[in-house]
Length: 243
Picture 1: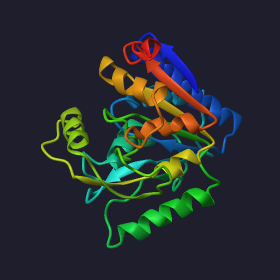
Picture 2: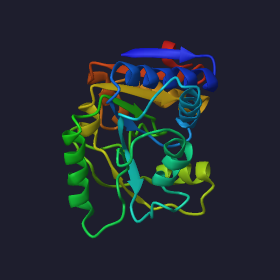
Picture 3: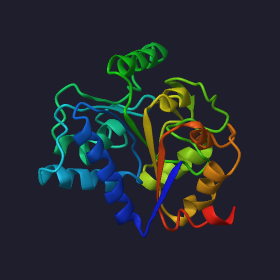
């Protein structure tokens, strides 16, 4: 596991954006797995800047996002569809139909989740998967206790996850379920890049990458993957040397 520590959030965001840009340069038709939340916002801003400067071209790339809230219309300001449009898709040159976010709306979400798996497979699998990490160690919306071989499915969100996300988005309410890629899906990615920033993530980062592999800390399963880059700012990394 390649753990890289940067001085601050801006430096780590630039480094993460550079890794994605390098991936696309080396393989223009790369399949990217993308994440939402406050942590990757800086990375997306850097990618938009690089695109405007002619340093990265998304025209042949494909993307699949990790998750979306159940019952959330794509136009809702709280939706991850909207987040991705505002932060990346509306500002770069992905080809039409090449960006994918799970749907939380439909009569058969289980079948839709299975179709999402089929779409990822048909695209050739994910070359580079971007992840954040929740305060309880979740990746995607795979909460503690999620099986390591799980696939895209409807999941129940913990009270902590809903509360933290509500605070970050300043939303009055959020759904308590989501459609999420499973950990088995994530682990099939050829390369994984996890981002974490802030002192509040230091304990869970240490447990995930220096502690035992356990479903109690879902991100710990990344220790089994052969190609993982962990991008941290100094506050998030502060406990790594102590264990």
